[in-house]
Length: 98
Image (tube, rainbow, N blue to C red):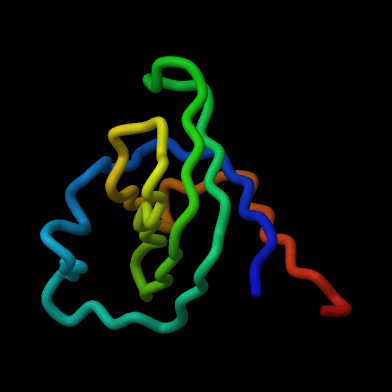
């Protein structure tokens, strides 16, 4: 499982990768791995303030997609898509024991 993902991105798309219970992939795009119960903490850039959500992450050969599964989320974010070429300073933390 992943405990946290931290990165800077030069581009991301909000609320375009997931709609009506369906994940939208580009032609030829494949999900390589997925993780549930991931906490997302967004801040800075064009976002107004800080946004938090809990959900699932899907990794494809082109991008990382976060899908908000929080019933009590304080944000209007349903999904977030970040292409790998735009990611900077990527850090993924996984627990070693547990």
